[in-house]
Image (cartoon, rainbow, N blue to C red; front, side, top):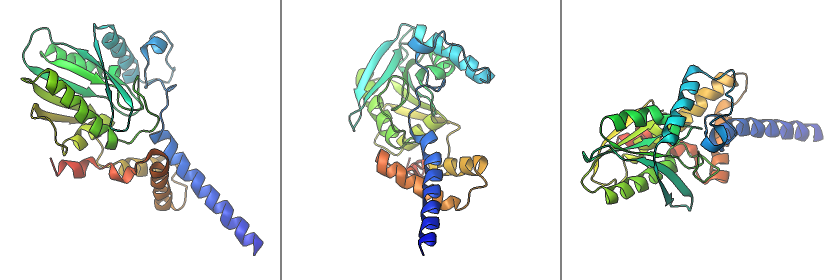
Length: 252
């Protein structure tokens, strides 16, 4: 009997460990990761020799963005986090404004090529650091769920300062999921366009794909995913099953 209990405990510990392996890389802040770029620390730091061409170019756009004469903004999230953003005004007033939202384990400057594109087209640009990324506070990532509420607050602030503007919400990857989920919220009337660049349909779908890709040998994958969801609920006050951009779009 005792051996059965020991084996059962070992299996449970194994499954909990596997669930944590799924949970930790996706939902916990990683400041040392070179995509979560901090200019004061990383401008002159060498990149990994394994870094892709995209990462190398993104770093150069980080440098470009942070070299601009930016106005710095800070807001308080609904759950008390200080969130940061940089604002680059247009060269002339055309009453157009873009809020640019970066992806997972990235930061505002990495979308510098998008911010530059909007700026060259005559837009004021606000590039945000999402919660638990860049200069913003936070340790837990919610895959667009709470971040979408943050973007609503940024849009409200910009609408107050630019009441006559036409506003675009642009997001890439997890940022795309963020703006998709913001689409079902009560956004300011100034928001006339939401542009989602390669968002996922659901956070659970992302975790499922990564689990099968990296740990295909693991048994009980559906159970492991559900354990991970419960961990996100316990530690991050958020269940990643609730991050569902595709469903949010149906309410846009």
